[in-house]
Image (cartoon, rainbow, N blue to C red; front, top):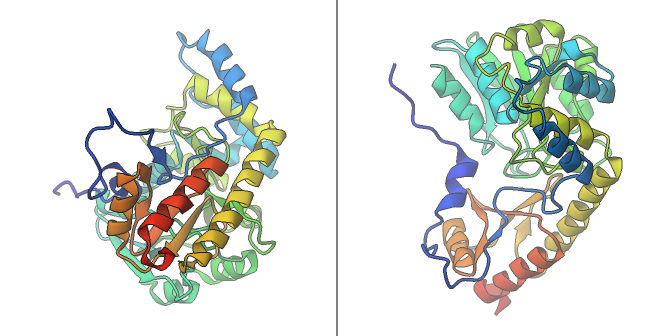
Length: 357
């Protein structure tokens, strides 16, 4: 089998937007509003714990990450047997594909969404089956259900969805899960759900406790601000976790990552401040974008998906000329930054968009 061409959408769109200047020697600092990073940084408690862990990093880590799994289990009312850890949620996705997918299997999801699902399918000889989002840019659960065949192995629901920021309500998701054939694994990617403020949107973890064939993905890269540390996890029944422990990356969570993640889970003040920064920034950017004539889709994440009524690649390039990096998909996506970054982005758009002149 030939090696598939990787289509990791997030990574591709951020590095070389069309028209970006190649040299920054005489440029102002670049503002990265393209990768949905936490501009508050990370927990001071996590930093201290990781610094202490460095002193023992000449020793191999606990390959089973027991302390971290126990702490995660406490958070969700589960046990360590329900937790799989890896180097970011993308690594969990890789593990799922390596363990479960075979040639000709189908991976079902809505599009546009996170490019790693396409990668997971094609890297393992499976077929990615893409169902369009609804007109409101939400996951089309009815469409997904109609697309199920006897070759469907995994259904992916990105909730809230990247890049659109929209989310599926918990009751709607539960009803979908309960009618899907039990032999199909339902993977719910909740990388951004901690930013949701819609009372109808919350985690699918209770479905695990009810015995459904659900695997919930989580990450420390977003609200915890630990994107560079690379630690994520999956939650599922013990049988699924046992399967994932057969994957190549099952024992690669580092000593430093384990220490930082445990500490960050306990820093409720930091998590609250991270949430509030994004909530305030999201409200500000939504209001300002709409005043500039943009169509903004309701977001439950740390980014906004919007239609500026110009080619997204052209808008990306124009922003890059002004040292602000944003995403370009079918429409445009901008990460929520801090107050200064958000204001700089809006000022940038006022220069670029015809409607603002």
